[in-house]
Length: 74
Ligand SMILES: [Zn+2]
Image (tube, rainbow, N blue to C red; front, side, top):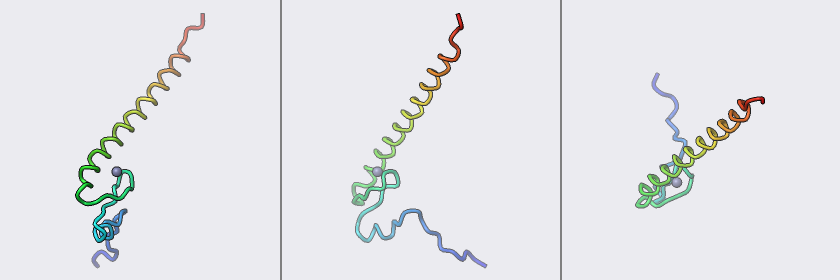
């Protein structure tokens, strides 16, 4: 028995190609095929930066809390 189910992509790219537009997997916006690659690269970079910033904020908050709890009781 072969694969009974056809692989369904999370994003319907086939439909998007008919309209000449692609759906960005990072921000879910539609873009023309010509500009998509350029956007996708910068969009991914932006997402990475945001994730980096979020992690930094998390670490900062953790450090702050640690600083409070480890403050000497004198
Ligand atoms: Zn995007």
